[in-house]
Length: 58
Image (cartoon, rainbow, N blue to C red):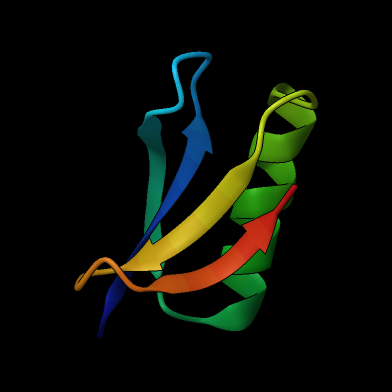
């Protein structure tokens, strides 16, 4: 199964991985919402193993 990295953008514009999950929509959504709750002022994204954008929260 493919893996997806859930990342938050730091204050310098770089992306830091906080969670790695399976490529299943519900798991990705839950992980992204949890990270957005932790960092409400930061952008959150999910990328696949090839670096392609899967989902994004501004």
